[in-house]
Amino acid sequence: MKKKFMIGLLTIVTCFTLGSTSFAASDMTKTSNNTTTENVKVAPYASMDIYRGIIYKKSDYPDGNDIPNKIYYSEGALSGWITLVEIKSLTGVTWIAYYQGTIS
Image (cartoon, rainbow, N blue to C red; front, side):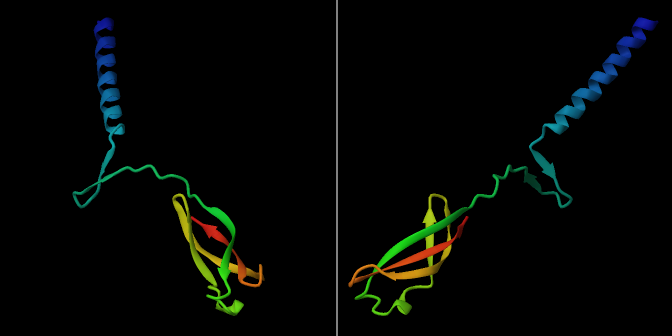
């Protein structure tokens, strides 16, 4: 009698264990409006601080105030707008404009 009881109890525990793990391993979750959404792993937020100098011809930008205040910059998968922080006269025919910002 004791042996049959233990086998029955073990069978019940095994059924509950297998049933609960099969539900836990599911990649899909059911929402209330009968649509499914997939569980997606999201990579951590990536960003990069940028400080770059760009050379402009004075024939294209005669006055330093004509140089763009912001430029769109990309590197690899990261991109964004960086802001003008400094302008210098590099030679008699060129400007160097320094831009700084964070791209993501």
